[in-house]
Image (cartoon, rainbow, N blue to C red):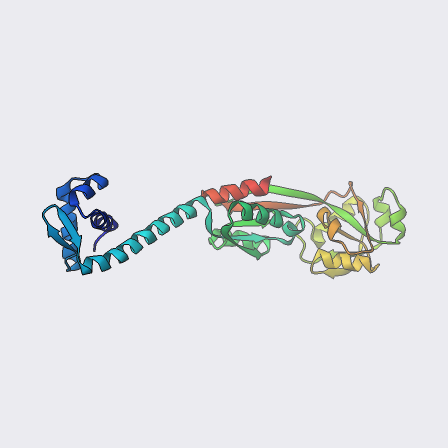
Length: 294
């Protein structure tokens, strides 16, 4: 099987029509160049040149082969450039997982904007997955990066992580509720009030942790409704059905009829971590880590 070097030699000889001149261009001696051309003809089983002293001319078969040789060399250059682009992260595909809180915090949108500007040909495959599923997918190499609610456990030493966002929880109150007139809401204002919680909240704000935090703060909530996501909870708050705590970034996404208050004494927050494989040293992964961490 001939190699690309032989094709380049053939093209140069064909274009110059002179083995000596082609050898100068290729920076090799004339004799090795002649041997390479003859070897190519032997391998193909066809004569490509008509030879007359120092001059060579393509015959009909040689002219037909030149067209294909040029196309193959051009395609090889494209493949080489594509490989370099893959190495630099300019093109290719990345699979990224995320939790709902990362979307609410704007991390996913920020990441997409930065990557679309820097690497317009890079394809990002985004998947909404719970934290545990993301960490396992990272281990199985079906994900390249994950935005999760908690760092990987100790038995996942191959997965690294860093904290990229921490948001306090804020209190969502129905408009017109008496609490909206209270400047500084304390635990005693919330004792016994109906509450709306999210079943699929992150581990540090889920129902059990929420109840524990409330009791620690000095009040007992009456959980009247459980929803699948915080936006649905805000909809119920808007309808006057109870109170809820949501991450601060959801203030701007709330429907009409919801008033927010800070609870500095309520020591709970939503944390978002970026997770990746420690051994993944691709430049694109490092760039994404820096972009998300800004």
